[in-house]
Length: 228
Image (cartoon, rainbow, N blue to C red; front, side, top):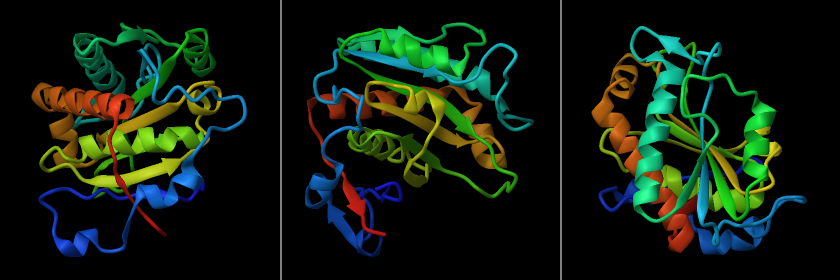
């Protein structure tokens, strides 16, 4: 299960890109349920904990193309809050300003709430400047579909590549007692993608896509998963 990666079929994709895909329903027995200590609210949640990664003394990735990650994270997170509240969800921000919040405290903020899911917003870094694309991480099994729905929407933005969903042991995920995902919106170290991620209009698209993925998760939706 920890090596499962998702691929998504888009209506404008070609047949070759769709080959080898299996409908998620075929693997639902593997993805069903949550890890011990995690409450599966993935289809009942009424509020979303929005975590803008980094902040304060922690800049995150910083490049001449995309600027400081902490600023981009917060900008997308604030836009996401507005969209989710407009859709009728409650929201909880782990930070709403340029403040340093320890990782354990971010998880505690989530855990003290009821009937929530947790979404952490980040941008990525690589020493290889050609690497690009969005990816979404999860820890508990019941967060895999959630991760897939968000990535499906983000990668549907024209020009945005998908790098799949991946299981990870990030602290904000493993310490969470609710379904939790970490969204890497793109690589600030890629010259083209970094400049794009620094653009407010693109960050608005990202916030819209993440919100759609969250809404699809709550009210229904499907994605396809590739067997490796």
